[in-house]
Length: 132
Image 1 (cartoon, rainbow, N blue to C red):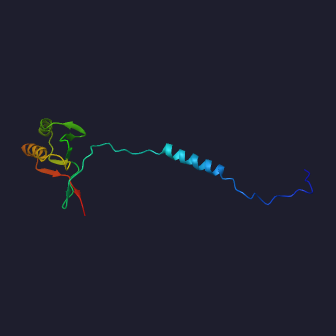
Image 2 (image 1 turned 135 degrees about the horizontal axis):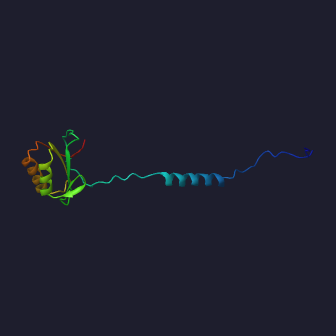
Image 3 (image 1 turned 120 degrees about the vertical axis):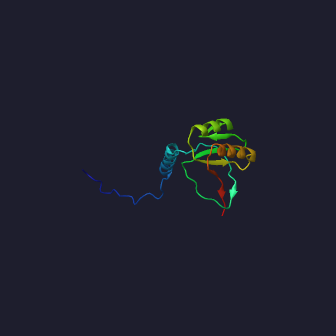
């Protein structure tokens, strides 16, 4: 191989080309946006009433949700008071956990409470939020 005798090696470029860097950053951004998954937790949206005192409840209890429109849900399925009475009669549930919206009518909660007492359920809990 023959080299030219008068050839010089340049010291370097005076400007850095950042276009390829921007392309790589945009590709990474698009990759992460497409591969990330957003977790959406399905459920019934209720606002629990606030309370100063609270205690933990057994998680094995049956949870009944009452919305602000007085719709009752058991296992994420809407049910009537009569259907809940039949279900409590057939199953041997010993504790109930009521999650009632703060705007739900007190009459609906009392009706549900009476049905639970009628079927001899001794442990009835009401969900609240705790404020410090």
